[in-house]
Length: 334
Image (cartoon, rainbow, N blue to C red; front, side, top):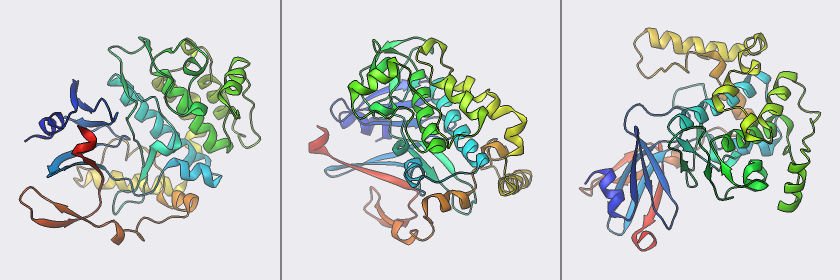
């Protein structure tokens, strides 16, 4: 039984979406995405679904360096080049998702996972948890969205508007994450939804002392445009001077340059796993910096992450934990 048919047989509805397969269960709200062609970088990938007696097992990419939320909670002062590389990966991930017609709707630090490929000195940020995803037939087309998600991360059109929204709700939410990483607080510090609505209407977003970079602040002001028509898309964000100017190149660390150069050499020597982002120093996040930020080393926990996987022939094999596993009981699914 193919993964697609398996998911459908367990009560999921499948939708062919360009080169992405979405499996959505109407009651659990779970959505798994499988890229049929080239995988989308910076997005957690659906790998496999198998049924074992009363369990359905869904394998997703494993992220071994926790989430962006861990950096936010640590109030760690990231070097400007590292902060920019994180932001660049995240907005590029958004751009690619939106290019496929998807709107995530629940962008927040907890849903932005970090992974260091084995033997690598770099970190890749992956957008995860597509449980509230929406599909647009055409970008720029608005659609009615329910106000689900995390209120302090939600765009104004979902909090104070008519909920006619498009992919720019994700741009606002990603801006909130960037604000948290740089400013160590929420852009709007409300304690209730009514207070949040009031402050959004009054456009009360104040520059914190921690955000010293004028280019970054200018970008955040563009992102936090109340009217979605004037808010930039993810693609437009990536063209902002914060990402494209001379300052961006000057703030790339020596370690990031070294990691990028090593990737370029590996590619020239025939390593087909190297992609265009690996050889662009503006996308390079050094693992050492993230280890310091979250006080965590994935290598220490490697042995604990060994798992037993039972194949359809009931043969037990050991594999490295390169997947996260979701176990769904049939009684819960059906």
